[in-house]
Length: 334
Image 1 (cartoon, helix red, strand yellow):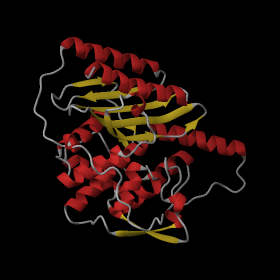
Image 2 (cartoon, helix red, strand yellow):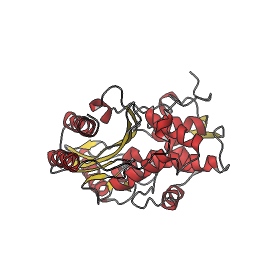
Image 3 (spheres, one colour):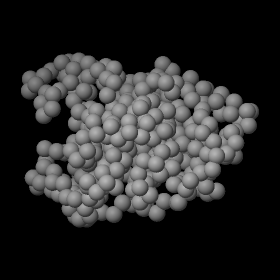
């Protein structure tokens, strides 16, 4: 397949229940609320000394379950969802077109993507991609090159301004994937490690970078803000109906990583965005998943889960998110 040809976003047909107006409903019975809260608290304790921040939101009633939800967590690739929303808003206003072509050079390639749909197929010195292709790659494939290309059209400060304009105060976008890499690697843009750097010096530099990333306030979100972002997207108050459907379809098409999906019944749809840092010396700075769970009867639940400073193995982290989804499904929609 030629990557310069327009690629239609996958799975564009998202159930209208995602964006249909939802009538207010009564809150869960007190025993159900308490049961889920207790289970979420127990899941969070499993992650210590890491911190697991969770918000579960019933969009019909507005009822929330919260654990460690007041602090801001590093988003990693979760930030690609608000970036995409800001781009779609520019399309809605007529300032951008889905078919606008963006030319990238080999110097624009950013590594570390979950499913590198652009970098892996890049050939020659220059290639052009449409905004449509970049959105699909950034959201569904979590392609780092694609999201940094989109940030040239809608800079980070404009993404944050878009969020603030919609009352989402706890989520901020300050830099792209290349900037995040620079924090981890403790290198300036385009800077390469010293040619004579020893293995010990490299390890020390990366350790400094990891500590710096954990302390960096940029590209962060509270679980509450992430849940509010998804609720507004679902309700159609962020974007036009067509852009809402398009972004939800791209989120639903993200199947790798399959974090919460592992714990859900097969008939539950999930539109989500994951975020993952690399692990250094047994410590994982960010392991996240935010999404909208929708049952065949149209009922939905919004979940925002951020795990930071985890010392658990990958298998333990995967089991944690599967158990989170399973717990929510079993308790709220048995």
